Length: 296
Length: 296
Image 1 (cartoon, helix red, strand yellow):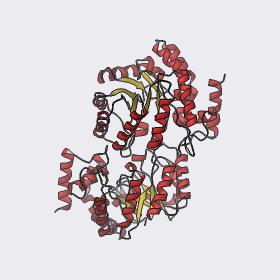
Image 2 (tube, chains in turn green, cyan):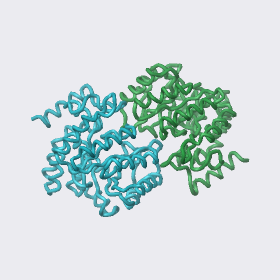
Image 3 (cartoon, chains in turn red, brown):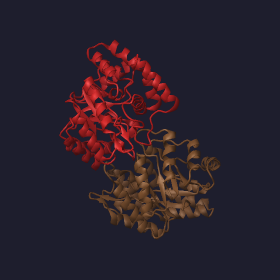
Image 4 (cartoon, rainbow over the protein chains, first blue to last red):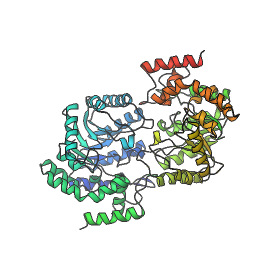
């Protein structure tokens, strides 16, 4: 399940809690499009803001409405004991894999992060994707730590941030990582902006924010890359540049949440406060970008 | 209560949860020393790792065992609705003030952080200390944001990180901040290493990690500074340089936790995993530092 396109849907909220109807609607879009896997409760799914009971409920809804597509959920939390509880809950909910970032409050050391992964993988029966996301965890993986963690049982993929849109740089970096981690561990793009480049330069999987809301174009990009048609993949990604520009400026979550609100797929506001989706001029600009991209 | 020495004790844990006996022992040390206020459940008190029920219990224990010394607790959480619940719990527990950092998973915008403080202060009846801690929150306050937040009701102090040990730089920065915030808002040192300089250059309060375990020397530093005896304050702080060096290398929490374990004031390990206190050579070095500083 750690190849191709993995789509990360929002977990829409209302004042009363999880907006289950809208979440199911998002799942149905992904099933209809036929993405390769679904990353529910990723960063885009606001896992870090939800109670355990809410995360359990969303995991169950995701599995129930995935139409047989493998579902992965994040089990990240600042405390190891909570991560272990979340892993149990997720496996009982029937997920096919779990995603784990070294979520932190105090900045973690490499040894602390290794021990976290070692402890958690000892208690798992499903595969685990290592979620390297320094923007949210304030932790930078070294290659040495990749090597140590990739050798642990159940580790099946790494979600790699900051890969370049420059093909040569990305190819070299992926070649370098291939030599470091076991061959059964796939390498995935964590950022949408360079994902077409990553997939056409040997990356295995795209862990995608945009595909959680608009799966069609990312799927076309992924299939083109898988078929060796780099030109089409890159051209399709370039068409999305107005969205990528908004991602760079506001963060992908705020943009995708605003887009879902604008299109009426979720009710507004759908993010957990203090997070706010786009407002004012930025929202107006997004409306015109969406019209150009998806309604012509 | 936002002047002088505010001591931040650990919240020691065992496998079963809060080590209440050891926490009370830590509180009793602070009461015996006569610190000016107690910051329970600060970063040193691992608030970000605890369940609401655990935080409520520690807040109640702190108030109960403070011997009349004002107690402040942190109400930080990634989600605004949780911060509001924690504020209610803390006030019901009888705290004299609350401490609020913009705890984040997704990197926050200035508007999101302002709205968080605006919302929370609207629901408060006790004073609030703004906790600026970019190392844990991944958020940098601008001076403009200090100005907006300092004007909100109940805001009484700012815990300022990164002040310099250079007297002129610190004096200039404090003078600059004085012009920006209302005169009733006190300015405090968030870092132990430069605190003596901050207090002798016009800072109002030292929010202190080391004082949570060893209150005597920090109290002597604070009293010297308050009496205009900068030389004594700085000389006493300089004596602690071997500890400050360990703080710089390992983070203050790991060092203080290890010191409390070594001295048998708490049982080992006392930190919530994945956090680990010092081990190996670093722990041995701390033992010799403690012997030199406190047992001769």
